[in-house]
Image (cartoon, rainbow, N blue to C red; front, side, top):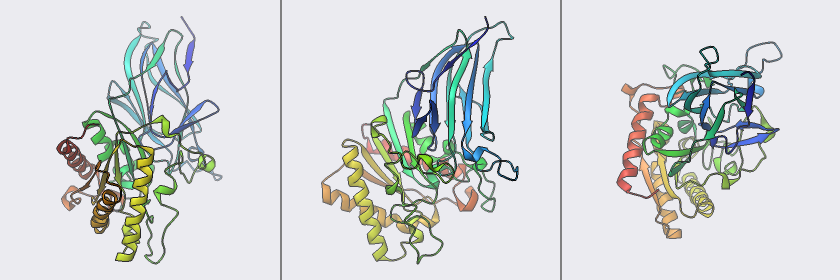
Length: 364
């Protein structure tokens, strides 16, 4: 039997994790670790993908740069990791049509490894043979959201040294403390993270100049932020799409570049408390974990994060909140691009966070 069947990447065909949007029936995955997952029974399976501006050659015919990196898994085993380096692409997951046409049953997971800051990727549809069918995997009992910066995005995590320049070819959210923690506690996940972002000030190389552009609270209610395809930047995120039971916030590392005195740290603390109140209004029952300290540059903000936690509890009486200070990355662990944590440091931080959650004995 010949022919194909095409499925739109939406419920009930697939489970979707992370921030995303639909535009002309294309599912655009924006956030780090945005995921599409489903069960399939088919003789053949392919993804028909669409790239954003980053996937096109420039006006001089040069190949694209900082385009989306993604991975596809079959039954939790890595099949491939590629970059979206063309405007359109057909990715064959399997094809048994020349092998007697035997249908295959499997769980398929498509994960966007890179952050929205750089680029998006669109799934036009999922294609099987004419007799194939797909069905969304069920949601997990636990749901976590990670709010953070480059540490949560996995910036430069695959670089061999701190001097190796960043590209999206070296970024991988699935190797971060966040993704590994979600996996360890068997939780669904959603990331809202952007490199160089802070809570009161984003990263600045001049302490005299505050960076208010890169402040995450200003974009938390948006679907996305990116320097490549900006046409979606004003769209509001629908918080009904995902309700986390646990929210891990890892911000402050970039704020440290500006918050060099007590007055500025005081403004950081106030901004943090205000953001926590905003989150509590959105998620009345979620447990908050405030994290900091994995990178050396962020460690001066550890006490400010602790103070924000205490001041929030005093102001609101809210007890569903705790703070963790990661142990600092160690030189013997090696460094990723720009001094960022590599896979070894991220894996250690994941264990620290996982153990911390178990000690809290919270119900999520």
